[in-house]
Every structure is written in structure tokens, then in C-alpha cells.
Length: 391
Picture 1 (cartoon, rainbow, N blue to C red):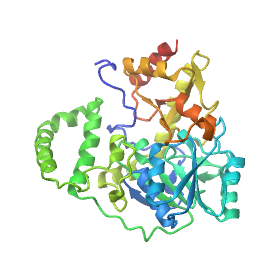
Picture 2 (cartoon, rainbow, N blue to C red; picture 1 turned 45 degrees about the horizontal axis):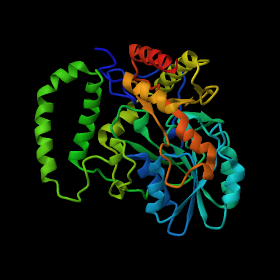
Picture 3 (spheres, rainbow, N blue to C red; picture 1 turned 90 degrees about the vertical axis):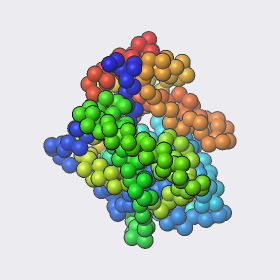
């Protein structure tokens, strides 16, 4: 089957090799940064972190001007005001602009590690927060695995959040981590047997849709058909206003549903997170990233957002700064190549007048898959198709 008819997975899918261990040195992740709680998404982790920090109405939270729209609703849920600070062209935080925006009502600074690349100014920002009595929320949604200056990602903030479903073959999953504070008071519970079953089965279905686990698909054909009928009956009986079987984040929505704030990540997602090999994931993603970079470097139509891949970095996707992103994305869409348009659109009112650099990055950066579950023929076909689209 051609890749034009069987789509390439934009994020990892379950396979028989997905939980294979890697030999060699140990690779650290957010889970090595401190005490952790497994939640259903990164945005729920943001809401929990803000709640733990006591954020309330009248407080301000400094947020990078280039952001996922899902970052802002948890701030509004706490009654706080998001204040957007500027970035430099290399996606590093503009320290001078942050200092200019500090006042007595600023309680939290959110710092994002974009695309898996740790913020070069993170140590300076940590020191600034300590000096001003501000809490640092480390956004590792793009950065589940990696190290910076001898520390695992997530170890710099008062709290750190991560989105494990960007790096692992799971249908939901996020992490709240703290290197500085106890999380013993953060009590979570399961969303119920319907949720637990849906997450496991949805992860299998995604694998089947991309041509993985073919033997399992054949064996489970009849049970999956029976499941579809049971699922329809369950949905019809679900009361209006009840918590849905899966969070909106699993369906690429930017909504924030506070009914998930006390819900634990599924048993299936927690098991995969515990069993997955950070060393294997990082090695595969780095190799795929560098292969894409080598094949696109010097071509017309744009360039890699980052000129090099530093040691210790585990990329989420390959961010490409396109000259004409709309035309490129349309050609790739027609060919069947999936892309990520991070931070598009930005939050209402965040435009060139707030941060021209962030507005430009939002419009021009196109992300290509480089995850560990890409098969050789998928990666080769994707690279060649991107090259043709750029030419």
C-alpha cells in the first residue's frame, strides 16, 4: 500500500518494537526531575500547577507570545491574567522584555522548551524568579526527554509539565512534576472503566490505521466489532453534562475541561510511559531529525529553525522555517505528508504589535514528523516528498 493511501503517523503509534529497551548509557527525562503525577494532558498539568501555586483572581502569569492556544485557558480558569512576553528569533526568551513586564501582581513565569530544545536562558530565568519571589513553571510539553547543563529537563522549575502523548504511542497522557515541592496532596482518581477501555482500544486502533500490529488486528477483529456496538449504546446512555470518555486533548482540541483536573492518566498510558525506553526514543528521534536536516539543508524555500541539534536534546518534530508556508503545506497535504503548525493561531490579540517575532514564527514554522516509530520506507518517502514540494 502506498503512503499516499496509508497516512504516515504524525505522532508515535504502538508497535511490537515500541517498548524495546536500548543499550548504552541511561537517558534522563522529566520523570527524573522530581516527584511526578500522571494526568491526562499537559494543559491539565498546567491547571494543577497553577492551583498548587495558589494562583487566583488578580494575579498575572507571564506566558511566551508564541504558545499553544491550550496554554491560556488554565490561566483563565484560575481567574488570573495572562501577560505575553517577547521571544528572540532563536525562540529564546527575551529577558529584557520579561523584566519590563514584572510588577507586584506577577506570580508565575512560564518558560517553554520549544520542539525539545531546552531554553538557553533557563538558568538565568530561574535566578530571576528566585530574586523576585516569582514561581517558575517549566513547560516541557515539547520536551519529555533530555538534559541541559547537567540536569534533566523539568528540574529547573518550581513545577514542570509535560505532554507524554507527543512522545509515546498513547492516546492521552501528561505529567506534573516538581523538583522543589511535594505533590503528596495532589490526589487523582481514575475516570472509570469506560475511560480505561477507550484509551487502550484507541491506542490499538491508531496502530491498526497505520499498518502496525497486523497480527493483533486480525485476532481482535471480532471483539473490536462488538466493542463498536457496545460503545454506541454507552454513548446513548451517557447523561448530558457527564464527563466524556476521553479528554478533548486526545482529539486535538485546545479546550480546557476542569472536570479532568482530578483524573489520573489511564492504566494503559501509565504502563507504556513506565516501560518505554528514553534512550531508544532519543536515539531514534535524533537520527531521524539529522537525516531530515541533511536532506533539506540548502534547498530553496526555507531552512531549519535551529542550525544544530545540541547534545542531550530529544526533538519533538523537525521545525522548518518556510518562506511560503501556506503553499508548502498545501502541496504536502495533497501528497499525504502530515505537518504540525504549532501556535497557529495565537491567542486572540497576540499579533505583531505584541511580538513580531512570535507572530512570524507562528505563521512560518512547519513541523515534520521525526518520531521513533517511523518506519524506514515512511521516512524515506516523506523526505523525498518534502524535497519535491520545496523544489
